[in-house]
Length: 212
Image (cartoon, rainbow, N blue to C red):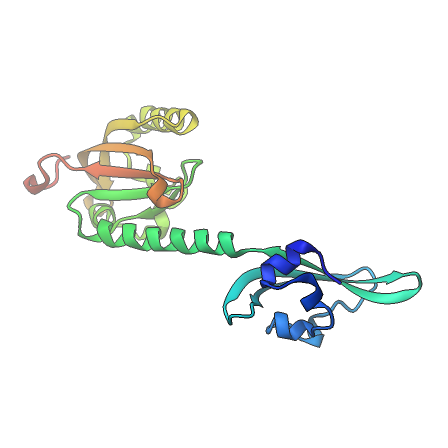
């Protein structure tokens, strides 16, 4: 048997679901996916096949049970279509953002909501001479002049906590030669990067070379 929600997911009437093999509704389902233990629950991401041939993203959780002494397999179906659509949109937005970041003259970062860096554009990598991995999390702080680091960190944490726009000027270091250059940084929340914080860095007098 099934309830109305399951019937809606599969685009059928409840009575039409009775007697159907699960594999006709969930093509990915096989006997090997059924839970083996009495209390075991098996969950899989799959697709629900509808009468018109379209598929809907679902999650299937199966559990063995006994009702009035008769063994049954209970299935819990969750509609995941909306979540999958949002995930795809996030991927598309992130890809588009990275493509734009590569060709912009400014340097861009993206960060998680807690302020941890998760991406730095090639321009910032070129400035510092360090690989991307060294800038992730709070690694980017190592490229700041020691005299500027404390005040910059304080402003950054306040902006993150209050969801305010971040503005700061500090000296950024290129590891080769220990040379520093003054940079101006700005950041604000950005829906385009899935709710993370996008940071834009600009270099005053970019063509003037490095300043100590």
